[in-house]
Length: 519
Image (tube, rainbow, N blue to C red; front, side, top):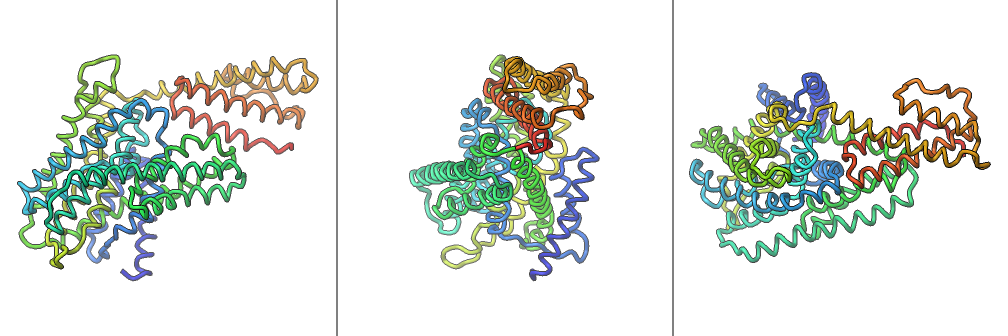
């Protein structure tokens, strides 16, 4: 595709995504599902240009920031509570899914056993970009949300090792050395963890010494690409490295940056993630018709074959999640169909399987063409679209009917209780300062009235036009610093959720940046 045409397609996708996202928000439909459908519809329009995207573009341009942003949303504190079931899912379920899909594909498709195993390895893991995008607005209980999110982030190393083994067998016809595969798994996963953690530590040191919002934004945008490239160059898992770096830096950002930088980073990343997610999900829909046209004769049953593979993945996931659902309900040791069904239905496929399928070599080692590559691409894309559309459009109603969803009143009560705790902490601090010559009694009185009004839910508050400017605003900054520390204490002691902490920190940042500089 010529450069000008490619740029035109990308611009069209951005415009399309903006319109689709607006409609999705109004109709309360997950944007990824609607974007995939929109891309599919556009691709079926006569005269629409064929779109062929390379795995290098997905791996080097799209994936790093999307993975990094998804990892930043994962609470390190909550991850510690579900690491055992996450490990079982990230290793055991991936292996079982690859074997099941491989067996089904070998039985219902014309794929040979080696290429059927390649298909199984490609589709074995859930996709963090899709899972995060679909689950962003679901009010699931904390442990369930963390489990689904963490599993999608950490199952890459297992599926990548399986994929490399499967491709090696397919193109060379060799035998599988599971001892070598195990060593490669530890190299990919362990190396990715070490590189991701190491670069996160370096970035954290730089952030502690940086106060320029522009420089901080550049660092934040460059970090996921640097981590991915360095890890991939060291022949480890670039995805795992980016995820580890994102989890570490996401959990420490509120300690490393000030309010102005946090607000700017959030705004910039929101735009970048919106654009990348919009383009990549649209591309998934756009690619399928072109891939179908490239299929050889005798493969007309691919829709039914893709459906069989998708049903296999979902059915196995439900059965696998039944015993694990006990771990998510420590006060009730019975198996919960509701938890198992919701977690299973939330495990969609997306960008990562597509990138893996696109990276399958065109020819075997003897130079002969791999004729089954086109069918693997079509089945992979079809299963991805099926999960994004069918599971994506029905996930929210399923969660609502399961009874697991947290009511808006629950979140509102938690936020209100936390705000009261912050206000009481400030009032206690004001009482300690009262009578000291270092503080203005008038300013302290105004500050006390302000936070008493917050406790009493008085939105009007005192008249700030009569406040002593410099003394009062200095006290306001001290109060915000005190509230930030109290918010951190509430979170560390598990009295509030990570979502509440982020929301209240955002409010404190807005309040701080709205104060005049009296220094």
